[in-house]
Length: 159
Image 1 (spheres, rainbow, N blue to C red):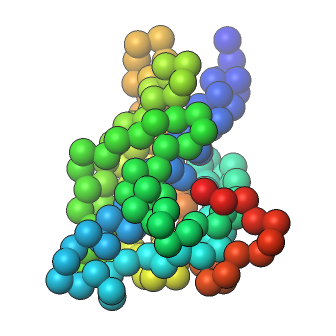
Image 2 (image 1 turned 90 degrees about the vertical axis):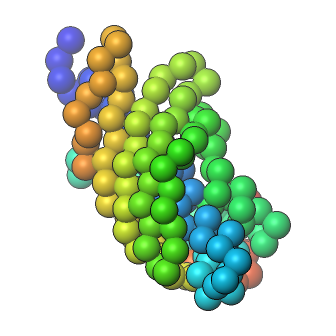
C-alpha cells in the first residue's frame, strides 16, 4: 500500500475530528462563572476552516444559543464521538487534548491550543490516527473560525 492512500484516509478522519475538537475548546469558558459574559463564544452563523497537510475544508453552521454548550463543549460530528479530558479554557486562551472514535471504530487523538474571542477563534495543533494498532505521528492541523452574523440565513444548516 502506498503512502498517498494512507494519507488520504488519515485526512478524511483527522479533519472532521480536528474540527470537532477545536469547536469544543472555545465555549467551555462560558462555564467560568466569574467572567461568563466576557469569556464566551456567541451563537449565530459561523464559518470555520480546518487544515491538515495543505488540505483545507470550509463549512458554515448555525448555532442556536441553546446549542452553544453542546456545540462547543461536547461536539461530536456525524462520524465521530469525541471526549476531551484535558481542557484549559479562559481569558481568551484554550488548550485541550482528547480522542475521537468513529462509528466504525477508527480512533484519532487530538491536541490543540490557541486563542478565541466572542466572534472568532484560531487553534493549531495536530491529530494522530490509529491504524493496524499503531498510532501515527501527530500531523499538523489547524482551524480558524469566524462568526458571520448574529442571525442565520433561512437556508442555513443547523448544528
